Image (tube, rainbow, N blue to C red):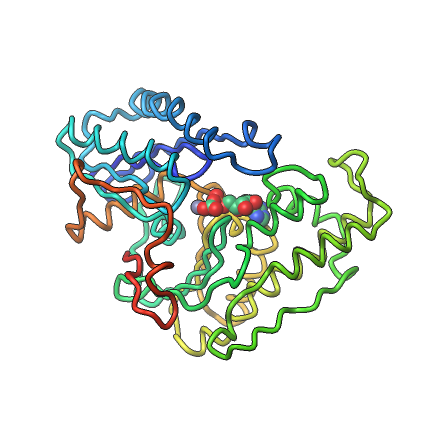
Length: 359
Ligand code: KG4
Ligand code: ZN
C-alpha cells in the first residue's frame, strides 16, 4: 500500500510517502530549530502553531513531487509527545483519511524509531524486521534497550532520570553553545581530548535495575566542571577554548561508554541476531563508530539508520503504519485519540505487564 506518513509529535513537521515495500519516495521535514533556539528548548505553543502552518505546505509539496492521488494508507503519530502538536497531526490525518476514505493507522512515535534502522534512503525496499533484534533507542525522550521479538518490543532497561539526548541538550545549553546540543557537541567533541576529564559512574543499588541508565549525575558533573573552568562565559560559542573542547570530548566519550556498557550482558541473556540503534543520538558519530566496532569485534551485525532518519521523520511513521496495516490494526478516523505519554511507560515497564509497542 502506497503510504502517506505524518509526524508532528515534537518540533519537526514531517511528511513522507513510501511504496508498499517500504521504499522511500519522498521524506520532507520542516525544522523549527530557528523558532525555538532563542529559548534553548521547544516551546509547545510555538511548535503547534508551526505544525499548523507547515503541514499543508509539506503535503502540497509531496503531492507536487510524487502525487498523493493514489495513496492507499495514511499513517500518523498518535503519541507520545506535545499534545498540541500531536493534535494538529492526528486531527489533520483523521480528516484527510475520512474525506478520502483511506484506512488510517495511528502509530506510537517509538514504533517509528524502532523500525527506522530497517529503512534506506537509496531507493531500496525496507528490510524485513527479523526476530530477536536488540535495539538501543536514544533520543530526546528515550534511552532504552528493547528486544524486538515476535512482533513485540520489550523494554530491557530504562533511564532513571534524563534521556541521553536531553543531557546533550542541557550540557550544551549550560555552556552557552546553543540548541539542539547533540549535533553541536558531536562536532566540537572531535576537537578535544576525551581522556582529559573522568566522571564517576552512577551506582544503582536495586539489583533489578542493574542495567538501567542514569545520566543526570553526569550532566551535573559536566556543568560543574564547566563552571570551574575560567573559560566561562564563552566568548564566541562557535570556537570554544581548548579546555571546553576537552570537557565535551570527555563527556561524549563517557556517555557513549555508559550507553554501550549493558550490551555484553544483554547479548549474553537474549542472544539477538542483530543489534540496532535509533533516535537522534544514534546520529552521533562516536555512537555509530563505537557500536559498529563493537559488532565487528564480536561478529554480530549492527544496523544503523541513515543519519537523516535518526531524528524525527515521517518515513519511519509511514513504515510503522504499514506494519500495523499488515496486522489489520487500523484506526477509526472518527475516534483517533492522541496521547501525550507512552501507555507502556505508565502501565508497566520492565517487570510489569505493559502494552508494549508492537512491530
Ligand atoms: O529522535 P529525536 O529527533 O527526537 C526525539 O524523539 O526526542 O532526537 C532529538 C535528540 C536531541 O536531544 C538532539 O540533541 C539529539 O537527539 N541529537 C544528537 C545528535 N543529533 C541529534 N545527540 C548527539 N549527537 C548527535 N549527532
Ligand atoms: Zn523521536
